Length: 181
Image: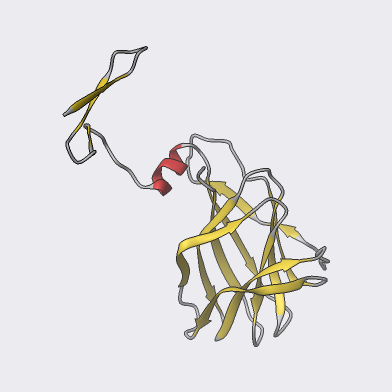
């Protein structure tokens, strides 16, 4: 066995014959650590899109680091499908209401560097592809759009939610965090 010693603190760690570091550690999920750092937020809004094919939520990363969407919880007053698109262009809104952004670490006042708005019909956006979809097959039931890889949004990039068919009230909560380095 080899011993690694920190020259400044004299702390040591043991390396076994299979090159494994032997140490005592407490592990926690990346989500929990990000939340402890005050970088995890809930974005909440309620909106009634005008009709089929309308974008109703827009998020653009205005910061210097990547943002990630970990999941989206959504319900609808009518059966429909929702698509999360990567988009480009300058959005045009009827009103353009800022979403409610709440830090999940109640002791932190950090907020994400992002534009997050909802509207009845957001236009002037061009789809670069669909990232996620969810078939909302039951009225007023929460559906959970998620992916194990997260959606990574680099500086200047944007996403938007689209209602595929019908009109009706949407309640939505998006989990947004700063990407780990």
